[in-house]
Image (cartoon, rainbow, N blue to C red; front, side, top):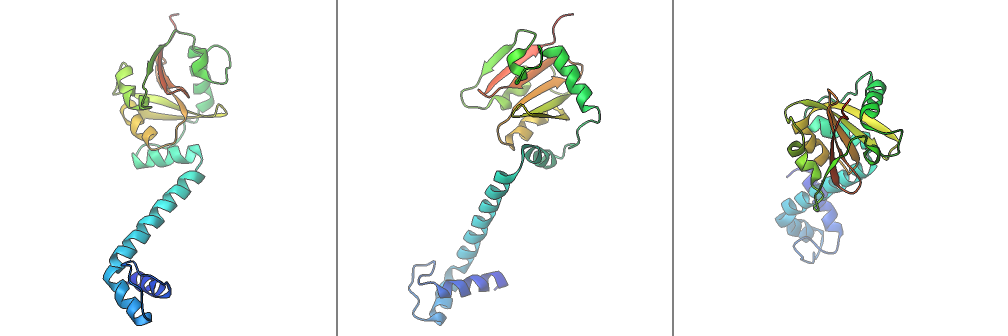
Length: 196
């Protein structure tokens, strides 16, 4: 019997009921009664601890921490480019009118909008993009305050997004020919770069 199981058996002996629902007569009976179900007790407690730890951790993570965790899980690069400000500025100048709070609300080109009632738009990204195999820019917009920028394969982005809380994001091909955004309404918005 493992030390953890012994600890739980000792704790169960101090309670008025065992997991099997038997009323222990004395401490010796409590040990016997809980040995029958100790493997269940230990497994249930460990699962409960794991779930609460996950919940606690996910509640306390910032958006960037969640994204970095998701990138690690997919074994993708987790660094932002050194020229992040210049890249974001160039993307904004090509696709966006002015300096709006939310980029998707001020696109220069007329967008095509796809709505998914089940909030699974991110699973359909590759259907909208002209080329699914290329590396693109993923721009994570943290409540319109800070934007995070990552170079990722387009076909990996749905898995990254699936491991994170909801946030507005933009996907831009590196030649700045097209952009996909998901807004706070769950709409996928596709637009081409304006004709020059």
